[in-house]
Image 1: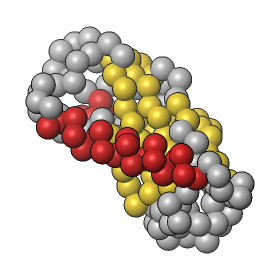
Image 2 (image 1 turned 60 degrees about the vertical axis):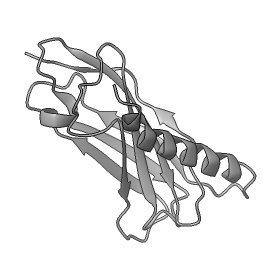
Image 3 (image 1 turned 30 degrees about the horizontal axis):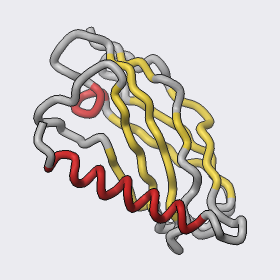
Image 4 (image 1 turned 180 degrees about the vertical axis):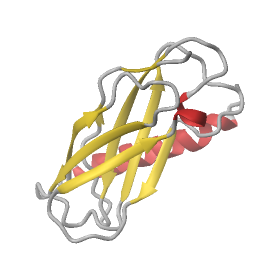
Length: 147
């Protein structure tokens, strides 16, 4: 595996940790997230859908949503369609609490050529427009069925 493949995820993780460390001394208004539901196991050709509830989200509008994938029983393919760290700009909204939905397709993100079921854990965090991060939360182990 090329070390350059780890550079971007490493930078994103470091930035998230740095932002999280700085936000610990905040005034208690950092965003809070929790996993409300997810489909598990993920069947062939089915998208992974994770519903995440947030509170203290008045400054999450136009913030950032970050997801980290850790494969527990498979090696990352040499040319993955998507990396193990993904981030998205949160759309503009006006609410203190609500729900975010993380959806990843089976083809490309979840599926491998071999026929071994995959086990993974996802970690999530959000960063508001002021750079204040939520705590990072982890999913239970997710099984991806490979036929």
